[in-house]
Image: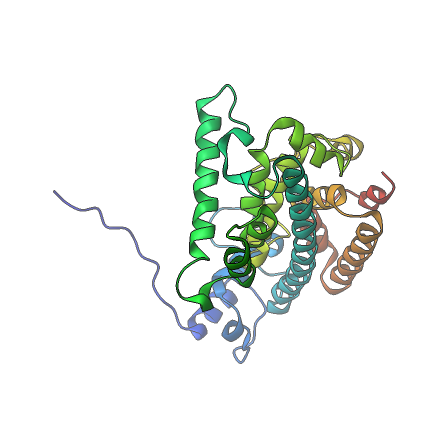
Length: 310
């Protein structure tokens, strides 16, 4: 049987890549060193949709852009991505404290590995999710209780040797935001709602936001583009979407909405001022039509700062 061969993308040296870009009318000097510091795929393909003026499929046309424009967009993306990651890390820590405090207030410091203390009622799939969660938690404990003490988390070692027990407020230290999202989603409904009340929202909304922000966090932590990111989950429709009359609930502006829901009012105020400063800086450094395209890809409405007063 013949094996179908896939067409491979050939390796090209930087001078050859610059030649390709000049053939696509991008303004880039032969001596330019940008591609020594940036991946061609990440930089050029990543921001092509902003600077490409061709309306036909095939090779793009960058006749109205320079290589510096691509770098400016990447610096903008880097700055807002870094700030968003910082805010999500703060949300992650706060939410961990809320979740495990409420859970421990119901079940104490030893029963977080008991399936009956989670939402298993009425569905085999729920039971499967709970058992998968407990298995994951047990692995967290096992991985931090091995003979090589240097590999163990200090808090795990302390509680294990002194109390022969790993309480929930210790295991939370080893959970990612994605794992926290799963832990919360598997709690019993009334416990989920008690926690959601801390944010004045419904438990279903908090479940979605935690899962949504875990995706955003991963993109930020792995240096992916965030300005035009599209998440695989939509936020639950809320008053912000109704006010701005927007249908898309999984883009950059959806990240802003999620942060609004989870952050303290004062912290969110400072975040919005920072974001406005970055957006204004971008506006001053690239052409107006490119700027408008970038905002469109971010899903930012004209009156977006109204979100502060909602």
